[in-house]
Amino acid sequence: MSDGDELDVIVVGAGPAGLACAWEAASNGLQVAVLERGDVAGAKNLSGGRLYLEPLRELCGSLLDGAPLERPVTSESIVLTDETSSVSFRLDENPASGPPSSATVLRAKLDAFLADKLSEKDAMVLPQQRVDSLVRENGRIAGVKVGSEELRAGLVVAADGALSFLAEETGLRAKRPVDQYAVGVKEVIELDAATIEQRFNLPAGQGASRLYMGEITKGLPGGGFLYTNATSISLGLVFQLPAVREWRGEAHLWELMERFKERPDVASLIAGGRTVEYGAHLVPEPDLKRLPDPGVPGLLLVGDAAGFVLNTGTTVRGMDLAMASGVLAGRSAVEAKRNTLEPAACLARYRVALETSFVMREMRAHKRAHGVLSMPHLYGHYPREVATLAQGFFRVGADGANMTVRQAVRHLRKNVLGWRGYRDLLRFNRM
Amino acid sequence: MKVEEKVALNAIKAHKESHIVVNEEACRACDNRVCLSVCPAELYSLDPDSGLVKIEHAGCLECGTCLVVCPAGAVTWKYPEPGFGIRYRHG
Ligand SMILES: Cc1cc2nc3c(=O)[nH]c(=O)nc-3n(C[C@H](O)[C@H](O)[C@H](O)COP(=O)(O)OP(=O)(O)OC[C@H]3O[C@@H](n4cnc5c(N)ncnc54)[C@H](O)[C@@H]3O)c2cc1C
Ligand code: SF4
Ligand code: SF4
Image 1 (cartoon, rainbow over the protein chains, first blue to last red):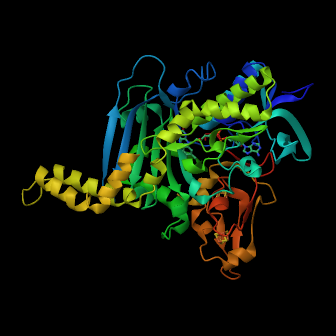
Image 2 (cartoon, chains in turn purple, brown):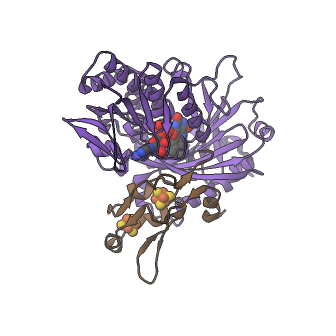
């Protein structure tokens, strides 16, 4: 693939996708450099905070050994909210022996750790390097431009995240379509370990995840999340951008975060905590039909740049898909170098590797989730009706009455399973 | 908490030049003005006298939301110069 002292691979972006790619390629003897615009890996990065480890165990080899995981998640809840109450579905698993299947993470630590690991393989991250554009030659991508400097490599990997100006430059993706994005805002709230474990009813060292839906986003498609870290809580809200654009709420978007924190059922969880950081980041909300081809000859897209994010309502996944696609791109680079493949053949290998891995399998399996999760009823009407029903079951009124199953069914039929509910149910079913 | 207080918690080294520029003409004609309410750091504001939309880049979280959401494509947005901008310590 390369001759002389030209690099084999230039990776743009030191997030999980780029770092996993560099690790795989460098582990197999390729000359790799990672260019990162931030001062260090992770400086510009933010996620909600739960990394699914199970799918990465084989793919990533020893890359994640010793990674700074905050807490393995053993307690999960889905919380439906209305104005005055919340209804939770909660799963508590007794901590099992062996490695955790998922854990909470903080990106500044995680990304710096992954970057450090590269030095074991004689690869490294070059910080404060902002790639401005691509270099083309003979119908392929042959390198990148950083300021006036040109850097060449056998392969360029665009791991430049949700905005991916590189994917845009190649024309693989349209200019930032609003309906393919959500925005997440997040606070990191410091709280001591004992308090966290007590409040979330956690065995020592274990963690909790809560996904919220309903009133908290004021009818906007989106939701909230809460993850427990070792000594802090990650709390945030995510909003789909098309609805935000048309939203004429009386508040600023950031104020909804304050209201979320002020809800008594959330305030009690973070009481006494101290917010130490406030961030925001885009989340790709890809529509499978418009997912870009994962590269052009000489350039492969990985992670958020390729649109590999899944929000199913019960899980939010980007980091595992980022790392998996990174490793697969790294492998394609290694094969290309070993067999002196043309850039187009390298891209073809990568496409096949994605298709036969869990990355594209999962993207396809959940292809309708995005559309279903855009249904406005999910964010107002349904959570409210579920709360009303739950209240009915648990309450005894002044007239001495407690809701009977028959009344509950009647209530459901009338308020939830109308023609509209039936249609929504069908959509759910197809999901 | 006020938004200024929230933003002030972050480590941000602002460059003297803004990495975000809005197109005055487009903003004047705009009847959406979503930038005013969507920016998580509330950095967009409307000057009541001139009717112009202004951006204060110094507290930018570099989320890119304003760029994607502006219906008129009036936002010119690039990453801050290397060595500048936000540095997440937790993320
Ligand atoms: C609020 C929120 C909650 C989330 N929750 C979860 C969750 O719980 N679990 C989960 O798995 N995923 C979650 N995600 C998604 C997850 O964060 C992303 O999918 C993941 O970070 C993608 O990794 P990446 O390496 O592709 O991109 P990024 O992590 O964004 O990395 C891109 C890197 O490229 C650099 N870069 C960009 N352009 C250039 C350039 N021109 N030159 C040099 N460097 C450049 C950036 O500085 C950055 O370091 C969440 C996302 C958000 C925003
Ligand atoms: S930046 Fe966009 S949304 Fe804001 S006023 Fe200007 S044109 Fe309108
Ligand atoms: S990038 Fe985000 S924080 Fe910065 S001005 Fe735009 S919306 Fe506000």
